[in-house]
Structure formats: C-alpha cells, structure tokens
Length: 330
Image 1 (cartoon, rainbow, N blue to C red):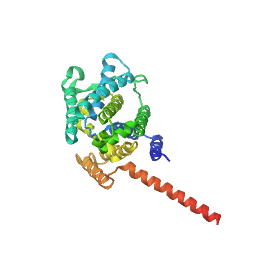
Image 2: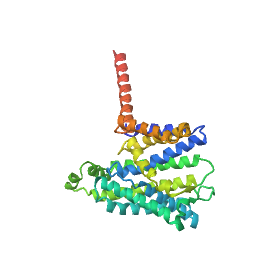
Image 3: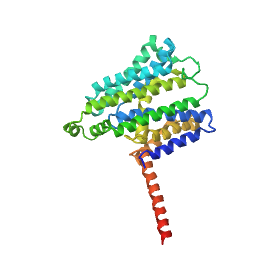
Image 4: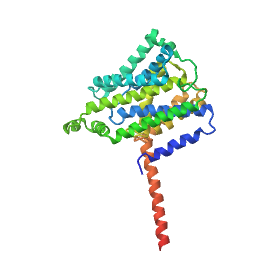
C-alpha cells in the first residue's frame, strides 16, 4: 500500500460530510480545505527543508490583494489575477529566500517575521492603493469567470481542487531530487554540501513554489469573503496558523497538513460557537490547552500516528485472515 492511502480515506470522509450540510458546516469544510492547502504550501519549505518561515501570510496577502486590485480597477478575472498573484509571490519568495537563507536558526525566523510585518505596514499605510485599514470590498457579481457564487458548494469544490494541487506538488517534490536535497539540508547541511548538493538553490526553488501556492489560497480567500483588509491577510495570527497546522498534522508529510486542519479549524469554530459568548477569550484558552496536550502526547504529528495505527490494523486483519485460512487447511 502507498504511504498516503490513509489520507485518501480522510478526504473521502470530507466529501461524505457535504451531503445534507448546512451553511455553517459547509463554511467549516471550506476553511479546513483552504487551510490544509495553505499549511501544505508552507510545509514545502518549513517541513521538508526545516526553514521555519513566519512570512507565509505575506504571500497569502499578496495573492489576495493582487487579484482583488486587478478585478476592482481593471476588471481582470480573479482566475487571471490569481495567476498574476502567484507569479509575483514566486519572484518575491525567491528574492526573500536569497537574502534570508544566509541566516540560521532564530535569525531566519525573525527575518521572515519582519518581512511579514513590513507587508502589513505597507498595506495599512498605502491607502491610495489598498484603502488601508478600511479594506477592499469586492463587487458582488456572481459567475464562474468572476469566481463568485451564491452558495458555498462551488467554493468547497474549488478549495478541494486547490488542496489536491498542493498535495500532488508535495508528493512530487517528496519523490524528486528536490525533496532529497531539501531533506539533506534539514538533516545536515554541511554533509549535503560535501557530497555536492546545492542546498541553497534547492531552497530557493522550494521558496518560489511555496510562495506561489500560498498566493493562490489568498485569492480564493478574498473571493470567498468578498472583502479583505491588512489584518485578515497579513496579520500575525494568519502567519502563525499555517505552521501550527503543519506541526500538529506532521511536518514533512504530504497529508500531515490535512490532518492538522481537520482538527484545528472545526475545533476553532465549534469552541467559538459553544463558549465564545459566555466569557470573552475562554474559547481561545480551551483551544490553546487542547493544542498543547496534542503536541505533548503526539509530538510527531497526527498523520504519522494515524498512519501507524492504520497499517497495524491492516496487518492484524491480514494475520487473522491467514490464521483462518491455515485452520481451514488443517
């Protein structure tokens, strides 16, 4: 069996939830799919190469603002705006990597955090372009070419296709030389360079891919909300969300971000709905405690643990089937 067979079962489970689902449930499913893909795009650089970037929100925001501004001012279809945002994010991601990859450890983390906050400041104060903290409201004109719909199912389908794209890219990288080079850097950069691996170039390529995929998610988020502002796309909470989901799900795995999103997004929404109104901030405290417990009990992530349990179950079934067959033979 392939190593991601267990993940296929989970994706099928998501689609089963779509039947007879109300708008609230559909909204949770959309958010889970979107953030699974965004965390998966972060995982390409943060998981495989071990480059813990806090700049992912910058590329999400670039994608959201690029497509929105092109649509509002020039009437460009968000589909084309999405490609433009991905291209711009790819170039900026490579440029940022060329600078920040010279730094190690917490210095790299701080540099990427600074870049993300710089983009937030630009979005807030460049009011002539972004309208600052007031944000941008997208015209409510529905249609496939405008990536705008009257119900949530089309958004869920697009988010699922986006997730499939990210997972496919991740699996391809994992099996390619690029994946081996990134893993080599994460495990031992000096040893990798001694044997001739150009880890710097590999990380630049991973940064470009990761950034462009994040921008695609930014466009989808903007079209779903019909509104964006600097905090909602460039904020520190957005910057921390993707790494958190990937860590909870399992770093450096193709399906880990999916498992992380399946836990975190519904948990966030349900806690807000159940206890959010009783005491301000209580749902965040409970949320934090649950995440700490999960990370303490399952440090390797949910997906590796689920995968192990899944294969143990399969082996047990095969063993039982073999035992029954031998008994019948006797």
